Length: 202
Image (cartoon, rainbow, N blue to C red):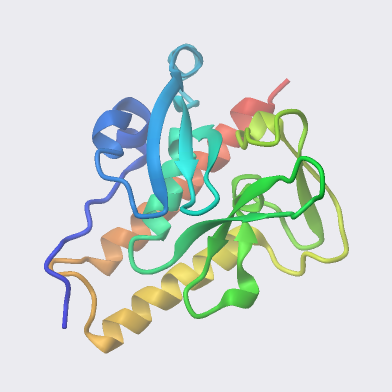
């Protein structure tokens, strides 16, 4: 059975110029969002507005990110992937962080910071200052043995996989265009790469 609710694509242009329209409807893993600062984005057209998003259900956390970053998360979870929060369970000042949850592939679940930093194989990602700020300017990559996969390639693989699986199972939403959906994924990834470069440029 197919869904009767079509998926409205959040394009990079919409996420950057009209967050109110782009994020009018939030997925279940996000409670609310608010605009933090649009002035920086207005000064540099390569940047998107900074927003704060409340993620999680039982363990809620407010994460600062760009509107392009939120657009990517919403886009990639439209068919069944998700975002969830977890804790490092530290005795003092435990940290709550957000992970991207891949449907039917729990072994590949990854912190969203790795996606936002485009971390490659054997690259860990840490925040420089505020641990809840996941904009590129606050993310740093370092060598780490454990991460075995490129974060963006992992995301791309599972998004494409789920489109194919649901297509074969006849459960894609009515009016869904796999071609448009996957093209918008690439547009978002390209826009985020350009934004990372703009943030990190000297």
